[in-house]
Length: 87
Figure 1 (cartoon, helix red, strand yellow):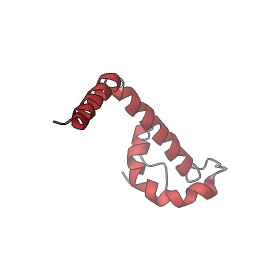
Figure 2: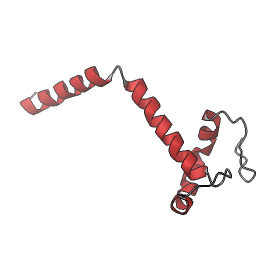
Figure 3: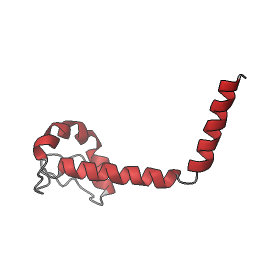
């Protein structure tokens, strides 16, 4: 192995050492941010006034793929939308 590969392996090991313990915390924080973003996108469809609905409207078709996972994670057993029956 040359010096560059050794440094790359060493850096990867340091990354695992420092962030390994917090991996679950980072994943939970990312999931919480994704849930908040999903709420912003689906707010208008759920009947909550959304001041950014003009900007999030074009994201709705893309986000519908993850809608089922999102509403189950939020504690809703059935889809809260009348027009979307995913369960």
